[in-house]
Length: 135
Image (cartoon, rainbow, N blue to C red; front, side, top):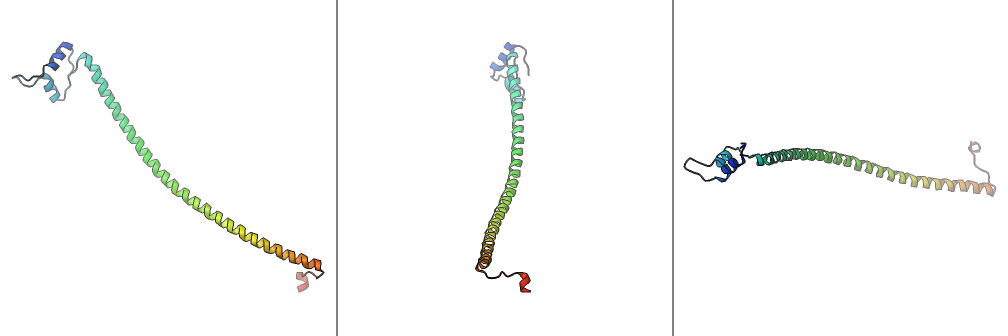
């Protein structure tokens, strides 16, 4: 409730004693959820209300940000699962590659030994065994 005169406002605020007619004007207005304001305090009350509304908006934005962060966490967990699975597949592929490389090395060594024997037989003067001679 706006009281346009400062002196009337201060009189209503300062006189809080109950007299025989009932509660003071200030107590009565507060019981009815009405805040009396003067020309000097009106702007301060409006600023308080504005700050309260800004606080509510910030709270709503914070709640929205938390929701987005929660969804981002869920997506990150899903990505992490896929990433670990791909890592396991790559690790298995590397192990199989290493096994295949070792096996190829052994086959290559055996082939070198066999080729070395054939060349050794060629140098000793014994005839080579060709598939046409065997038939």
